[in-house]
Length: 378
Image (tube, rainbow, N blue to C red; front, side, top):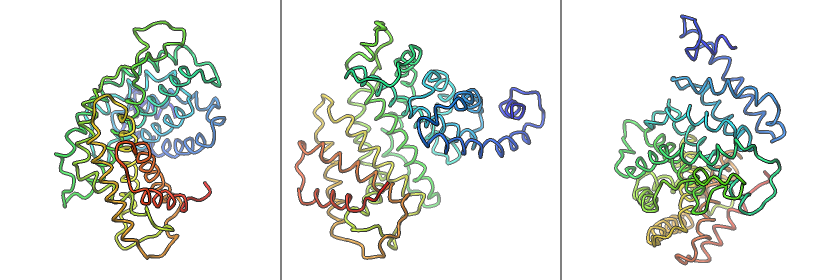
């Protein structure tokens, strides 16, 4: 498909680019979907030469100004490879190709800002993982290439502008119009974008350390061994407070914890749409991760955490008092996983923050045992 790809990306000599682009999408999208499914099977499969040889093709697709199916699935495939710690030598080129797409973040459902932000967050996860292994003297399966270490060490600088953009966007979230009756999708897409922004911000914050990044890797180059904390603690708490005052948070927490005290999975008359459920659960989970990432900061901002804990507590109390009585076991496994992830993130945060504000131990145990009781194999 080289000729089709060249014309689609504007590097070929073809004239009927509209037709070529359409044909390229028809063939590339299912092929990329299949590759994503194959790569997710195991790390051994993702290490096959096939996935390394297609990196230039994925980079060419990211060069496209028009965001479409092939670009979306290219991002998903890259995220999968990075999750295994593969293709890290291409970090710099991936960031440089992706950054223009999120210079102006948009909640337009046809834009891929959320996918790009999640890709950046995965790069931060890789940087943090390698740094932790070096710091704790954990044996690494394979010695990383010096180029990989350099790229990961510099990724903090390359991603700093995107992180700052996320902070500015999230700080103004409470002033955004999130529930316009004529545009019901606006709220969902805004929640999705905000969840991705939180994902990047929490991953970047977790990777930012006061200690030298890769200080013991033998490079001895302090000028590029620091994952620079470009986001201040004050900015993090400004984001935290803005989200807690937004309608997004109120809507998301009510959706994500709706099954908290049910003995089985149920569907009631007021069940949200399938599009809203995963977005709300992801938003809650990412906020919990972000709150956990900044809980050890030096500024005494316990009141903000107490506000979050109080909101969660009130929501749990309300759902425990209003148990549904609809048919059980009518939620499929995929939908169950969304709620489980959000509930686990909430439970972990509450346990980690029990020194800040004491909770009703009976309520916490009921919440935990209900979650355990609804788990199933896989």
